[in-house]
Length: 437
Image (tube, rainbow, N blue to C red; front, side):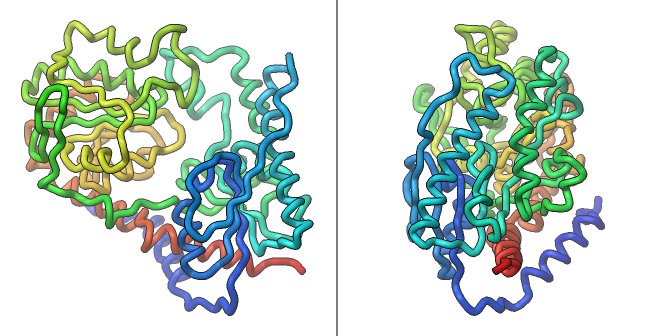
C-alpha cells in the first residue's frame, strides 16, 4: 500500500518551504513562556530558543528543575475556592484564581520594564486569561489541547460508563475559560488535526496544527535490548513474544478494560507470550472507580481466574529510559483510547519500530492506516484485540514492513528536530513580526 497521503503531503511541502526560508532575523527576541508546570510542552521549544540566542522567561507555579538559560518567575494563587460554590463553576473559579496570580506576576514584570516580543502560553489551567491586559499589543500564541463536548467525543463514547445527567452542563461550563482563551489569543497551536477539530469552527482559523515532536534520533529500534524482571529473575529480549501496554494510569479512557479482557485468549493461544503493562493506579481522565478500589484491580478481577500471572507483569510507572527499552523489546504494542487527546506514547512506540495495534478511533486513525503502518481494532472488542495480537505473534515476519513504515511515519511527520521544532520556531518568528507598536 502507498505510504503517501495527498493532503498531508501538500501540508508538509508547504510547511517545509516556510521552514527552509532563509532566516532574516537581525536581533534576538524576548520570549515569555507561560505554563503552570513548566517546561511541559515547552521543553524543547525553550531549549531551542535559548540555543539560538533569544532571551527566554517562564512564568510557572510548580518548582520543577530549571532549564539552562531560562529565567523562571514563579507565582502562586493567593486564595482557594469559595466554600459551597456551585459545582458547575468551581473549575472556572479555579482558573480565574490562577489567572489572577499569573496576571499579577506579569504586571510585576511589566513594572520592572520587561516587555516580551511574543507570549506562548498553555491556557488549560487559566494562566493566560488576563495576560493580554498587561501587554495588549504583544502577540499571544496559545496551546489548545482539547475543547470539551457533551456528545460526539469522549463523553458518552463508552456505554459501559453511562453519562451522568449533570455532565453536559458541567462540560459547557468548563468551556467558559476555553472560549475566552480562543477569543483573546492572536493564534493557537494544536498537536493534531483531530484535537484542533474539537474547537468551535468559528475559531479554527486561528489554530495551526503543530505537534510537539518525537525525538526519533533517541527513540530507535534496537535489537540487542533486554530487560530483567527482578522478581521473576527473568530476562526479556527483543525477539521474544512481548506484548506491551502503556499509559500514565490504567483506566477506561485508555482502553485498559478492553485490553485486560483480551489477555486470557492471548495467553491461551500463545503460551510463550509475556504481557508487560505500564501505568499507575490513579485516574487522569473521567470518573473514578468505586471507593476503595482501582480500575486496575476492578477489571483484573473479572479475568483473574483465567490469567497466568507468571506471564503478566504490572510494572507500575517506570523511568523514561526503561520505557524506551520496553518499546524496543516489544513484539506488539497495544494502544487504545477514547476519542480524546492522543498520547505521546503511541508515537514514541512507532518511532521505536513497534508494531502498534491501535483502536479504530479518530485520534489514532489520524496517524495509523490499517495494514500500512499499523493495525486497527474495535475499541470495544476484546476478541478482536486478542485475534489481532495473536496473529502478529504467530507470523511476525509478515508485519516487518509495517514496523518500518510506522517509524518512517514518525520521521516524516513528527520528527522533533527536522519537522516539528522548526515549525514551532518559524511560527513564533512569524507572529513576533506582527507586533503593533
